[in-house]
Image (cartoon, rainbow, N blue to C red):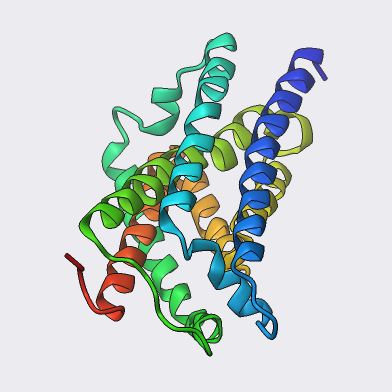
Amino acid sequence: MKETNIQNAGRAFHLTAVLTFFVAGFEVLLALFHYQPGMSFFNIANCVTVNPYFYCLILILANLILLPGAMLLYRQNGLSLKDEIIGRKTWAKDILYGVLALVITEMLQLLFLPIYQLEQSGMTNTAENSAGVIVLRIIALVLVSGICKEIYFRGIAKTFCGSVMGETTALLLFNVMFAMLDWYNIGFSFVAGLVWIWAYKKSGHLIACMIAHGGANLIGICYMVLTSGGLQK
């Protein structure tokens, strides 16, 4: 096994691990800040996004600060991140797999509704739905997370760690980190990640899982607005 491959795998793992533990640690601090005696774990998890400004800004900054490192990793190895995202000749197939993965993700989301109801139980719905917050959520969760996280947790996992530990093993390991970063989703990110891995492997390009990831978050934002009183002025 080439030493360069091992070094690249180490860089890819460290970059993604930094993102995972930084964001997950910040989420824990947010949850503890809003903790009140008697809260269940589900209620504590729900506290992570109580302050959408802090949460979204940290998510945006953490992802964008590390993005140049991922881009440099591709460039130094003579690889095109653009070609990794979408194929010129296969873009229609790539998009089709993305839409299919989105549909599957939303079907699985229905199975998690009882868990989300437990998160909300005993708590007042204080979701802020002003236009500014909605735009910030779309930037953070649909655009930045939908694109950057797929580069970190799917793209560099397969491209740089797959040759060292095996493609499937690498994708599953990084999916565990993906679930750790979104621990407050009580396991849904891991399940959704498996679907997005499938779409990525079938299409061969990241656009498929980017569509599924960003689309699922956009639907979640719309659902939150509709179920919490609509858009606020």
